[in-house]
Image (cartoon, rainbow, N blue to C red; front, side, top):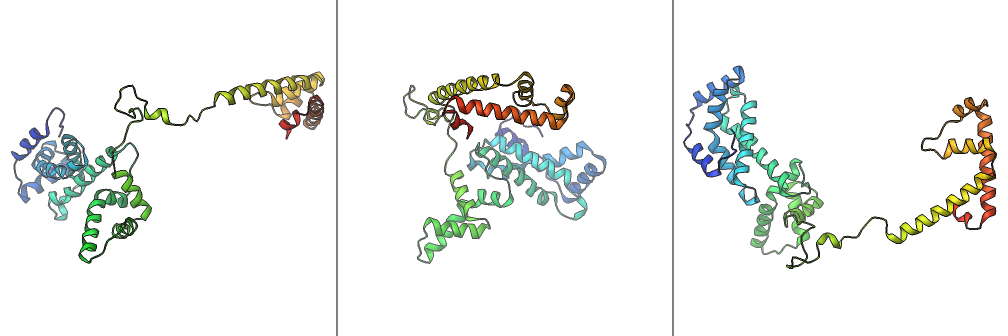
Length: 292
């Protein structure tokens, strides 16, 4: 049942005018949809119980979602129920549909409550929709006994009542304590005030670090060029192909190209590295810092 373009009031009025199905008619329509995919039968079944979907949707208005969106989700749950309903089990469709309608609405509310995902397990859903009610009940019972619960005691009791860890209760209290805030909101009422995002620490490379890194890199490149000049042509080629390319070549491929064994190429590479290390150590004591 598409609700685009309709207000929640218009949908409610339509639903109130829908027919009331007796058990026999309901059973016939459910069988027609299940066995023959009769869309007219499905439409009658869904339309007849839209008042149930709207009634359940209205119970979730306190979570701040638009009523028309809640009705839309409730109608989706109603259609899922119709698709999975088995008329031979002897249960009225309304009884079966309640669970699907509620589940669909709850999923929507939790998806849209916050940009931070609240949770989707059954225990987290139970906590999300029952936390305030359970807290109020426990505080009322404690007051009747003449007791005063602190926050830690209350959280432990809520966790035991709902069957979730205390950490989940603390997390959900934070989720329900307020709505999301934009980092682009100003810190004061002044339109030209600084935005909250400007107060976040920049985790990028700072200017001083960038200059220092560039300077050190240039020095290392100079040392490396001078060390490479102390190698013969074949050693320079092996080092360049093995270590100075993004994807270094294998000893085997270089051996085939140079007409050498794999082991001989490895020996030439080791000898070249030994020459370079000696050259670098002889250039400056500062090099030792980079070789460690």
